[in-house]
Image 1 (cartoon, rainbow, N blue to C red):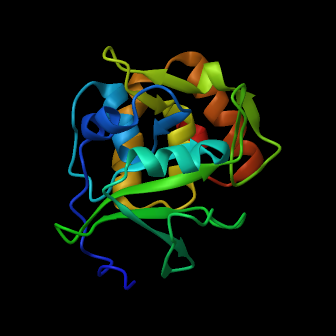
Image 2 (cartoon, helix red, strand yellow):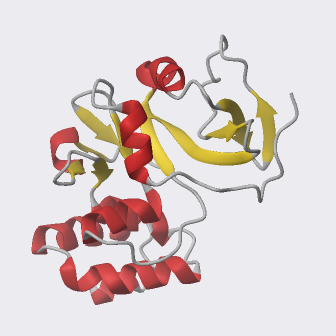
Length: 197
């Protein structure tokens, strides 16, 4: 099966994903949408909808998102992943395509943690209790804590990442600033966000 064009995104809103996934598996919104869920409002347009799920829950997530067809995304290469085949261990992204509408809807990211522990995928030595890292909106929609989202964004330094940091910084709690500063000092020691924290 051929993938859709890479630009064929018309992502769902996180609330739409919540309706389908519910609360029976370990999943949470990441990326820019996670920050907006934390802010309590949409601050900018989002071209995709990224969410993480424990590897042990991938099959169940795919089943709950049954109308979607999934493709692995590795180094820019997009390949069909049959529903009966689990993703290989090195696969970090699965794009979900709506074949009827011809649009990408979600970007599912297998997570390396456990039900009790969150693990940063770019450095497996960075772990935190899941209870400290996964937040929920008032209606129960799970999302990754803002300090962790900003840590992911620190690597690429795109314009949207800089704007996301600028908007988030005044709202970060002292403990979140401390966590982000410590993580940046370890993983990106020359980053100019450190001085601003």
